[in-house]
Image (cartoon, rainbow, N blue to C red; front, side):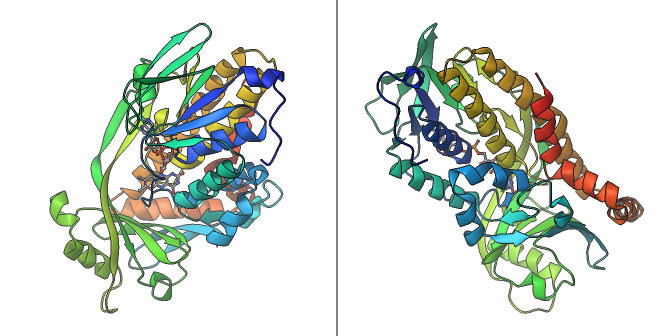
Length: 408
Ligand SMILES: Cc1cc2nc3c(=O)[nH]c(=O)nc-3n(C[C@H](O)[C@H](O)[C@H](O)COP(=O)(O)OP(=O)(O)OC[C@H]3O[C@@H](n4cnc5c(N)ncnc54)[C@H](O)[C@@H]3O)c2cc1C
């Protein structure tokens, strides 16, 4: 990233890019363009980086892809290496554990890393700052106009409303409610899952009470499902209203305390930290490109967080998109943007959305017989070294990335 800017007559200067959104996807996009000497600036509506606890899992190929930006090492220092993950039946503790070390040789990072996505954003913002790339906070994009030579971007927010900026390519990495997607007239069909998830954090040491717990655990509980994801200093739990409980009641500190205590009863206090109810959507943009406007990340696709693939998939978009943009800036064909869409949209549709949906369905099984049947099927996979590795290549997003490379 600490590369010198290209000289004034360098052709790369002809393709200046505006990235909308300073989430993980926008910042990876900007950092990779800057590293390749492509002029880029980031416009972000908020007045600072988002601090919310959202994604906590980084998959092996994502860590590989972030390595050249020089951030993987620091992420590893800030996070918790997760050599295995499991599906678990509570309270019996019956479980199947997937061992990510079987991926050694396929990736430089044969494990998942548990670290909040905001840590990646902070590191990238720092890098962009050092490289002199403008990240303009308080700049909300409110509209756009494009012509054959470029895109005019309208900015509102904290700056004087009605200010316009021009670029050769506009990247919409502005999240689920993307104003760029809307202004470009790109449809975002899909659906909203019926349940409300309650994200709750606690410092309760589940690992000392639940035998053989991994750092990432998808759990069948007597009354439904939950997940327990460990971060360096706390557990991030996904909980749900039970027995028709209204969401407003289920998300109170008392109710969350009750739900956490029910996981390990008679174990003293379960301190409750952050509580955040949210709805989950499954949506896929009709296209990721309209002329000189391109979408990536949540602006282009949304999936159930079961399995944690939204941010990872968005970062994979950012890598594929920047590869295309760098080649275009070097004189390559604009058709490369269509190939970006073919590659990423196909993998998101056929792999990410499907897998996330299947993970969610599995964890919503209620019938004990079906749960045992599923557990037995998963155990057969881990018992067979070839099937185990194949399963992890797929669920760790390696296979999807390899498939994308084959799409012409
Ligand atoms: C509870 C939870 C847990 C999750 N866990 C995981 C996980 O473990 N693994 C995983 O891979 N994914 C996970 N996800 C999904 C992940 O958080 C998202 O996929 C990821 O944040 C998408 O990144 P993004 O950069 O595309 O969008 P965002 O992170 O939403 O960033 C978009 C940015 O654009 C800005 N913006 C919006 N509108 C405008 C505008 N008009 N002008 C300028 N700026 C604008 C926003 O302020 C924001 O900063 C989880 C999500 C949730 C809610």
